[in-house]
Each structure stands twice: as C-alpha cells, then as structure tokens.
Image 1 (cartoon, rainbow, N blue to C red):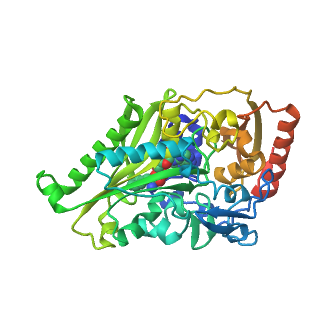
Image 2 (image 1 turned 90 degrees about the horizontal axis):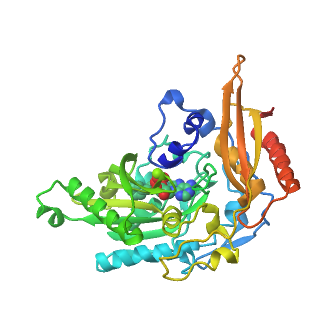
Image 3 (image 1 turned 120 degrees about the vertical axis):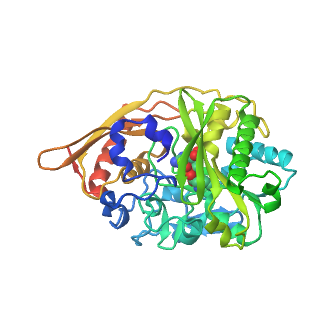
Length: 430
Ligand code: FA5
Ligand code: MG
C-alpha cells in the first residue's frame, strides 16, 4: 500500500494496512501485529470467471503455457487466469500506447542528459525466482511483501516479479553499471483508480566510482543522493514542465536513505516513484564495495496518468478505439478526452470476517468476477461486537469505461460476488 492510498482512503482502512501493505517501503510488522494469516494460511485459489481461459502467452518470443503459471492444484500458486492473460501484453513495448510513449520519453531524457550511457532493457521475463525478487535486494525473510497475500507465486521458489528491482543484482553481476529496466510487474493489491494488479515500472540504476565524488569533496552517500534527486527532478520537468512535487522520506530494504516523489494531481498527492542510495550489501555481491550507487523505480502508469490526464488506471488496458486512437508515437502533448463518463453503480456487502480474511483476497474475488467493471472497493464500515466478531462492510463501485451497465448485469455480478465470497473466503455474510 502506498502513501497515496493511505492518505486518500478512509481512516478505517488503517486496520487493514497491517494485513495488506503492498510496496516495499513498509518494514515488517512488529511481531505483536504479525498475522499468521498473512504468511501461513493457504489462500484460496481465485478462479476467474469473466475471462476466456488463455492457454499460452508469448513473452519476447518465448511461449509460456498456462499450466506453467496457473497451477490449480498447488496451494502455493495464487495466479488467476486474469493475471496470466496479462503476461504477454507488453504495453511498455508499444510505441503508440501511453505506457510505451512515456517509456520512450524517459529514454530521451537519459540519452540527452547522460550521452546514452544508460543501457536500456525492456524484455526481461517477469517470471523470476524469489531470490531475485527478494533475497538479492535484501528484503528481510519476514517482510510483508513476501506473503502470498501480496505477491503472485507460481510455486514456492518462483513469482511474478513485484518490482523491476528484481533485476538489479543479476545485472550488476553481469557487469552493467548504468541501466534502465522497464517491465510489467504484478501485485495483489487494493482496487481504486490508481492501483491495478499489473502495472509497469522502470528501474534506473547508476554506479559511481571514487573519482566521481572525490572532486566534489562530499560524502559519497550524500553525493549520490543529491545526484539522484537532481536527475529525477530534471526528469519530472522534462515530462511535465512545471508541476507541483514534493519529496517524502521513506523506507526500502534496498536503499538508505530512501525517498518517494509525489506529484500533485487531481487535488491530491500521487506517489509516482520510489528511490534511494543503494545498500552496500547489494554492491558487495558484485565486488563493488568501493563504489556507491543510486536506484529508482518509476510507476509508469502513474506518470502517464499525470502526463496525459488519464483519470483511471484501468483505461491503460482498454482496447476501445476511443482510447487507443487518442495517442500517437512520440506525442507527449496529448490530453486524454474522456469519451463519456458512464454512471457508477454502488453495491455494499457486509460480512463477519474470519482470522484469515484479508482485503487483497476479497479484492481478487471481486476482480475475478467483475474484471475491469469494478472501479473501486472501499471499506466503509468496520466494527467488533461484544462476542469479538468483526464485521466489515465494503462498497463496491461498478462502472464501465466503455458503456452503461444495466441494473440486471450489476445485480448479477453482485450476486456472484456474494456467492464466491462466501465459498472462498470463509466469512459469514450478513
Ligand atoms: C518499489 O517497487 C521499489 N522497488 C522502488 C525502488 C526502486 C525504490 C529502486 C528504491 C530503489 P513501490 O512499491 O513504492 O517501490 O512502487 C514504486 C512505484 O510503483 C510507486 O511509487 C507507484 O508509482 C507504483 N505503484 C505501486 N503500486 C502500484 C499499483 N498497484 N498500481 C500502479 N502503480 C503502482
Ligand atoms: Mg511506494
């Protein structure tokens, strides 16, 4: 869970933050808070309903079969078909798609400011080992991001990368020292206009040698931190011209100090990237103990939302011509014109939760049934009765980006959500 969503949602969500805090800045819980549910309870497999089952996808010329990724009988596998079907999409490699356009614009910034010294990689497979995704970047063994609640596991050793930082260590080991890695990343997460279970990141990494900082007379960490901020502020100006932004101190296991950049967008602060000065332990793995480095991870959807004025993250996945035709290769000045705003439809669902209940599991059930017709899932009421039973009430906002939904259709979706929630989540509907 990002700073942005914590700030912009109901205070009652705070109770949930402990269970579903996606993102890397959050340190592992104090043990009194740690919930077995997050780590050990077998999570239900969410079978997808609305999506046709895709039997294979192509990732940069390599064919991946559904059975290699979606394993119905493996309890450590939690990849639904809806996620598998996104694996071959590669929006970041489409020059006329907003994600591809923003990637190219960032490339231009680095090419012109750093004389093409940054290598660019955008075809690394999103299927990585837990070692790459976590261990190599010093994510502690009990960090929340490792849980089945937050990450899509193919098996106990293999995940869909949840950040492009998964490639830092292997690239350093291969001798790369300045690089940009772009790719699709996967996270079980909450549902709203700025969160989606698949999104795109660009990782930037830059190693410095003593001759770089010696001349400045500065402490190497300070030197790197200042260079990093200057680089990213320059990038923001390159993309947006003048825009209101602020730095926020944060925590990541792989950097120290660590920062996030937020941009003022639609009357709120939107977190667009995380970054920091790389932990020495990571450099040491590649014999770079006499160096310092900075790293960043950009959220490309978030940047593209600001740049093109795109109000809802689901739109990036739309194949509706009224969306796709608005963007062209290299066109940065475009502002998205909403083709129509169709009415939302609100449905509430209340239930007594069980020990193992998590909001991410609930959201996955809703997405499995409603797909991109769900706009937001919000906890609107939360109380514990005298017997110690806790009730949650969620408001589900259904809205299509492309058409008006009928009452009948929404009622049908809601009734399926109720059935599935009862069947899969071990809760008692109220
Ligand atoms: C990371 O993923 C770190 N790996 C970033 C990093 C790299 C830090 C290198 C330091 C050094 P975080 O979980 O905050 O951090 O995600 C980075 C960015 O991805 C966020 O700032 C946000 O822009 C975007 N993001 C995160 N979750 C989502 C989501 N569910 N949907 C869309 N964008 C998201
Ligand atoms: Mg973050």
